[in-house]
Figure (cartoon, rainbow, N blue to C red):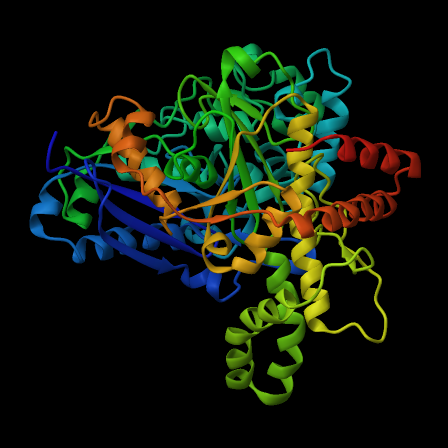
Length: 561
């Protein structure tokens, strides 16, 4: 079909972005970003306890404002020829809903209750519940964690749900079911939010909720009730089937068609997580390692099922048939903090300025600080005796999830200044990335190329060059600065029947690459030495035997990308 357009909607941690794309050329013809109002104020969150909640009103307001804003920049002809909308979100970001699929926080009695809201991906209040899930699964006749790397995370669906119904009796009594953000917000557009009938994302279910066809869907009722009797009956109020992102969720409802000024013929695609649709937007291909680099990272790799499907990859965030593209095994890993590490250091410096000199001075410094530190750090030599830091400031996502871990810096002296610490923090995030790559290689999964998308990839040459040096691998940066929204648009084009496959949509709508970072041989060897020290420091902080660290180091020295 010629002269048709699709809309990709990307719900990030801080904002939602809508992108209108020509289905034949990939040209963007309209875009708009809406910042979450309540989230920006810090409402319902407590970083000291790792509680991060988002109000569904932020999502609803953002959905309407971003799409309407994008359409306002487009012609009437574009509006009349929009054929599909698909949505990606952060995840796992589940929330409790009633029998109609209404999030509890949209009811007056739960409007200010954080437990009735969506529990953001980086909320770690369920560490204890995740550990209980792991202990039970590893002693059950079926290890339900086998397809999620063998370790269940507090960032995921069941842990968050279990903790919430344990600590909040009102939520326990009124929550009929639970939904992922990507499922609920996609269903909203269709007018069918019934938790028993709305189409659930294969991506979200497989990577975060222990769904697998081998288990006949979700973990058994016996397993769940053994975990906690409070979970009795929940399985039957969730779902059995899941759907890939090339499929339709339904058509745009009359209500939302009127709100947006679109036709009810517009197809809404099944949703997915931002990283997986971002990988589509970054033109992922088999064995390409796509890094979505922002406040955290999510790493996506896909491979033919017949080549990798028989392997169980330890310590990652899951391997799911069709989570990226139908017919391909999607593998996910990532770091719980990347840009968040740099943001923490910036707050550490600007906090006293704000207290002593006021907001204006602090805001001015904040806007200039990271570029300044990057420029200063870039001039520093890389030596075998440099500071070593760990990137676990928000725990460790992969390899081997453990969100109770803490960050550390070693090698400080009276001559240590801010640029040196910043350089060490950047290197720590690169070393954390290297440990993920090494795990894939250990497990027999080859990596043919590295592709980067996201704010850090587009804005920080110093970080990207350091990452290329540490990985000892060229890194391509996708041209689009909205790769997740572009990937969602590609999925919408397939769901609407414009393109027959994800690959065809990528070929027609892809943006290509506008930068490539080559590793510098003179830095690679030194970073290898520093990486071994990173592994040793990590083993010490994690209280592992020294011999374990040595064996990891020896293996890392024997492997190359």
